[in-house]
Amino acid sequence: MIFDISAEVLENRFVSGITWEIRLKAPEIAKTTQPGQFVMLSTHRSENREYDPLNRRPFAVADIEGEIIAIYYDVVGRGTKKLTSLKGKDKVNLLGPLGNGVFPIEGIKKAVVVAGGIGASGVSLLVKRLAEKGIPTTVLYGARSKEFLSMRDWYDKISRKGVNVHYYTDDGSFGKKGFPVEDLDVFVNPETVIYACGPKPLLRYLKDYSQRKGIKTYLSLDRRMACGWGVCLGCVVKTDKGFERVCKEGPVFEAEVLKEF
View 1 (tube, helix red, strand yellow):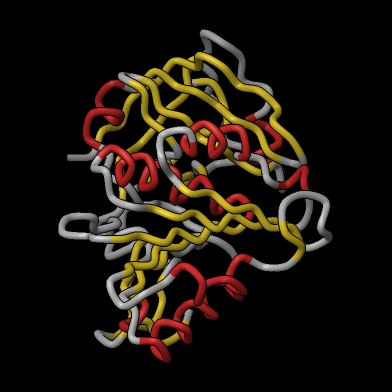
View 2 (view 1 turned 180 degrees about the horizontal axis):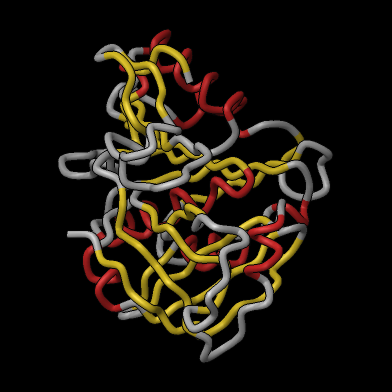
């Protein structure tokens, strides 16, 4: 079921780099969201009849605590810049949970989760659910520099619950210098399932890696979306079934079915 609600803003704060975190009271969405699903969030207060920007913006549900959902977002344009003006007790329109392609976790024996930049928010709820099930999980989290590891505090916290977290930065300002995929062979064995969210080059590398190694891999794709529920056809990718919508059939796809993305 998809809910269209007016959610209360509990907190909206700058984190680091260009990333902010917004926490919303949204009990219907908190109760029903599965790892990999997303929401469409308005950029202005519910009571304001504003039409610029017109469309809501898609964001991963990064965490759920009771009735509260957390969203991490990069400020990269007019819409996300406007989001930063929301304050506690404001109400904002929210549509979700969206997406039928989710991260499967039943029957998994070992997981390696690869997160690139803000893509860390696309797999964080997955990591939490894996930890709750006691599935051995390693996270390889990379960004261009220390300040762009915007969810490091969250991942440090989950690491205290048994998740093995490794950090990488392009410039070596924190963790290991280099890219998270460089160490895949260290952590992956035939029983491993790889999950990932991040920039296209990272996901394309993982698709090739999964084919070479025969490792089951699931990729969460990021696309510009106008509607978020399959009507506008603006977020299609080519799969072995033809063109499919990231917002509807995705956003999570098994790597082997993707042809062009």
